[in-house]
Length: 230
Length: 399
Ligand SMILES: Nc1ncnc2c1ncn2[C@@H]1O[C@H](COP(=O)(O)OP(=O)(O)O)[C@@H](O)[C@H]1O
Ligand SMILES: [Mg+2]
Image 1 (cartoon, each protein chain N blue to C red):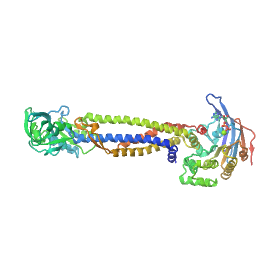
Image 2 (image 1 turned 90 degrees about the vertical axis):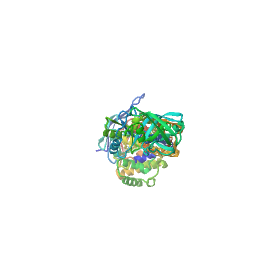
Image 3 (image 1 turned 180 degrees about the vertical axis):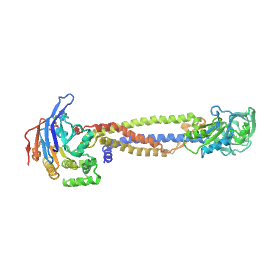
Image 4 (image 1 turned 135 degrees about the horizontal axis):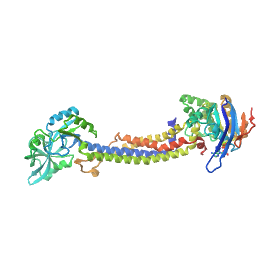
């Protein structure tokens, strides 16, 4: 069973006073467990829309998405929230850490939603932080950290609860080349060590070059030819 | 973590939260102090009423309350007292005769109220000049009446009235002393004599007009005791009435004041609630993106609602503590309140208290808690619902 299965998904944005915008036009895609996959494509091609639909924070206009075999259509808001908590990790372009929580608390948040006891939460976060070179930032407030450090914490938050898939929408777009490359190395390391499935979007050749597999979106459609990396 | 997250969110915009909490706190303080002030005054009034002329309850001959007349007496007061002690343990009864008459001293005269009191039992008055109430032909005269009649201790006066049997009652008395009471009406109109002397003056035999009952309670509502007493009395010949039935306007005015406070509370509630609404709407608006992040991470909508409500509740809790402390400070700083300029004189024969020992009444905390917590909750409800209903993608798009 694929970890993520996208079947003929369309997404039409309808806004008052605007012609309907076709962001996705029948996208089908299958992602296996442990993949390190990139979603390429120019700005406006539908990368964010597709990741949002896979992550259950946006809904397809038609078609179906399954995560770990669970179909997303027809789920209530609470059920979708539970699905995200249990199976999805998000990394956003703008880090989006909660500023009133420390770095460790940000990562603990999802574990806490899952009802993991405090001591175990702390231990798991500490472990992940140390592996990611964040050991000394456990009790730092996000706004006192650099962009690269914040994004590492965001990655830690996304993986710590061992989701089925981590969705990272242009995770390096706010970082300089070197920091971006380091973040990609880190994510790739986690992918290899923990077997975490990653889908990340980018239009940066450096980022795309790290991917095991690249699928390209153009104008809401997947290009036939896929690039398979090492 | 929800509690601690909500707590930290309170302090993100400390200035705004402090303003909200100040408004809530002042509202709480206002409600607590107005409530305490009013109820301390009510307690003082009730305690004056029940300790004085009226008592908690009275037993009369049937119909006396409606139309008092010298011939309507409780025939066997000691029997009634025995019943009373059985039904209402701890209650104290005082037999009383009350009649009207004309008093003359020298060339002056005045219509008077004649009180027949059990010597030593009555808390109605304190002796101002002269001796206390004895048996026989010694009487005490209200201090203002004594001035009007021009009599002093040792002087003489003549009383004329009609006895229960229709004959003319008259006799000559010696002024043993003057008294003052909690009632200007008594001070200006009353003559007190021993119960037995009054019974023989009005030809009542053993009969009395009133059995004044004082209960071992501070409660304002003594209807349960009145009911219990009625159940044990022969209601074909006797009646039992509570102080609030004897002074219905006084009870009504207390209730009216409470209702007025209800209105004031509601206005405070409304203003403060709008403040909370405003602050929480701003907070949710500013944090839209973050709420979207929390939703994306898998926070259920209800938990988001709870988080916003908790943020307001924290502020309500702090405002409650600060407001109660502020009210206590105000009440105890004032200490005693001199009401003589506001509330001078008598109302319905009862002198209004002129000095109040102010204190914070625990009962006021209920209203204060309702204001603090319910206002916080209701004020935050709409913003919290808005936060709950945010679509994560749209929230994330906000910058
Ligand atoms: N909320 C929206 N309302 C209307 N159109 C939108 C909205 N979000 C995205 N679109 C449109 O959908 C298309 C795909 O957008 P997006 O998924 O953000 O692409 P990408 O992430 O590849 O830049 C674009 O044409 C964009 O203008
Ligand atoms: Mg995008």
